[in-house]
Image (cartoon, rainbow, N blue to C red; front, side):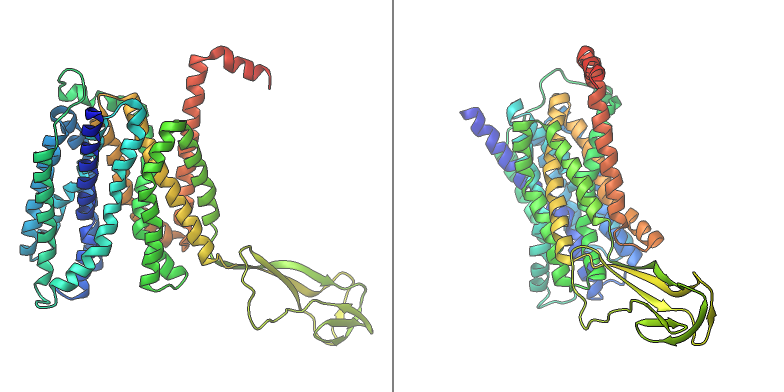
Length: 491
């Protein structure tokens, strides 16, 4: 009972610290936007983009070495050190007076993003196999720390700037730094250090698991369920504003409806992975990601194409043309006219309309089978905003469950290298969050379609599912050759 109490205490500290770190990791999203809007710094759009991405980049690329240090020295030492050291660039941020000084300090405090690799390794050593999924899922709920910044930071900035509009913002990074210091002290006082079982390993031994293809396969899964999740957390706001002309507030609400449930449901994903197995859960996650991204691929569009026309029943002269008929030598042939309605009917499914437009003139001589009226078909797809929003929320929930399932795999296959393997997988996922918006932007520019990003998601989801299924079939053939032979014989 005491062991379980100790484990739960460490899990609580890890989750709380990770939430604080994740809030700090996304600080620039609010702070840089505010500084530019208020004219305090005249950074270009490109410079703003880099300042938003730099903390995400540093917090991703250093996850592997931090994971190695966690396996080697234990989570208490590394987590406490990380919290205290990352507070220093935040304390210095108010003194930044140029793009480069702000960028360097952002790179340094962005290292709080490596807290994921520390927490994964440190949490897993405290729990038995049947608890791993739930524990890591609960820890992963710290992703919701990003919502803390988007909710609290704007209010704090307004309060700090009331009396000093020019320098009031400087209190925000100082506040975040103080919270990191407090969290670091709590870790030193209440946490207990613990390392994976086994002899002390040198760096080459610790890095040995990275030669396994399995690690890179897990990284590909995490690129989708975490990296693309982070990317869409930023991408959805301009998406809704451009396609559906929503306000900034409403677009932000839809983006929150995507990100918040995805973070909270991660614990449930851990429970499902413990109960049904991570592999089975990943089948459902990847399958649902394929189906939902396919449905999201279709843009709001209108297509005009050739339809069924009217041909002359006999040779003769066009004697009369009206809105609905063409007469040849006095004999009428009916044409369909375009119906004009005052208000377009909204429909979830594509709506088809067909009509015909006259191409001949009065007193014109025509031959049998000659075209009298060309056919036009209009296919209109409104891509209903609320249907789109529901699908986006569902894929976010699916990815949230998938994040827990991916990390349920790691302690099963690499029980003594959770830190290093988790760090590598987290690195790949974090890089997905960094490069995702860049890829989406290039796709948008080249295709002109906002939904082109969902085509990318569809292909990544399909690739991951095929890779996982192929691996499982290969393992079955090796371990149960007679069973697979019977399946093939009974086809």
